[in-house]
Image (cartoon, rainbow, N blue to C red; front, side, top):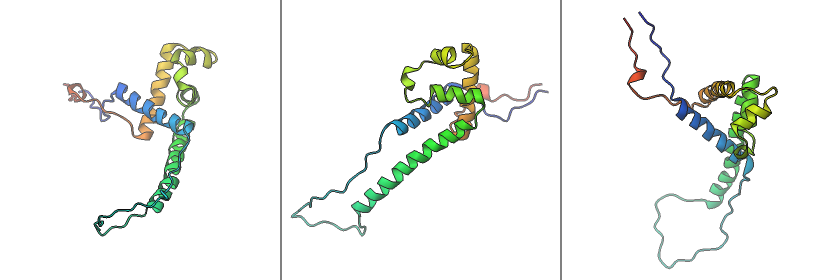
Length: 159
């Protein structure tokens, strides 16, 4: 009798895309400055009566909340990513920092990282294994695992 697996089948390609998207968001938050919203200071005059729905809006308060909460959320997101990466094993951490957390990411190729950044250089296959191990841990911690859908995931007990 074979053993039944309780771990879901992971769609490696889609999971990798989710983790890469998380790093893209991280780099955007690190690179782009936050533009604060400002309240409109000009009055609006209208001849028609306004309808009241029983709610009041406070433009200044909602802008102030946005100006405080958005940068805090961006900072918290970046700190969470950095905390998770710091806990990775040395080679996984190095790979992620060089390839995905670098603001110049678009210009650094995988080949550049495994051939020139790693000292001594590593092979493409080793690089792929290290990258997937790091991505798997990151996806688990960030809740980005994408399960495979299909009949091959439902293996029964073999006789």
